[in-house]
Every structure is written in C-alpha cells, then in structure tokens.
Length: 80
Image (cartoon, rainbow, N blue to C red; front, side, top):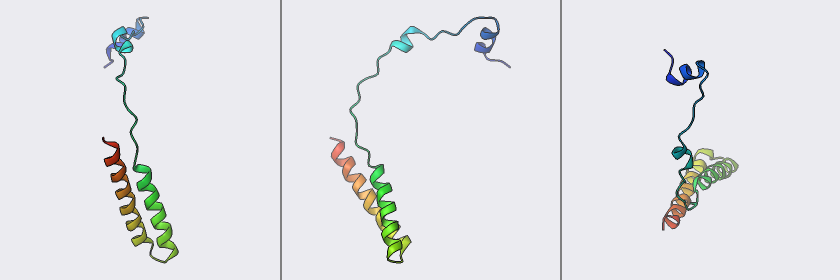
C-alpha cells in the first residue's frame, strides 16, 4: 500500500511544504552548560588512576562519583 505522497509523485505532482511551517521562527534559547563531559572525564581519569595503583574498578567508581558530583554542581549553577 502506497502513501499519498508516493501516488502524487507518480502522477508528476510535487510535494510542497506549507509556508507557515517553514516560516515559523524558533524561540530564542539560552545556551546551557553541559556536565556530561565531566562525568566522562571522571570515569576515564578514575580508571586511569585506579589502574596505576592496581585497583581499576574502585578507581573507575570513585572517578564516576566525582564526575557526577561535578556535573550536578554545574547543573545547579546553570539552572538559575
């Protein structure tokens, strides 16, 4: 079963977007700080330090916790 736009294309017609849909301006949005990088950095850094001292898993978990804490602090500061 073909959709309507397939049938219209088969008959030589073209699809046109409604002008109102394309001309609607987006509301301005303030840029927000992202804390995901801090979580990833904490994971990698914690795993690296943990591997260096022979305890990779606890280092990874501690690094993840520190990264999440840093991300939450960035989120609290950014939410105004």
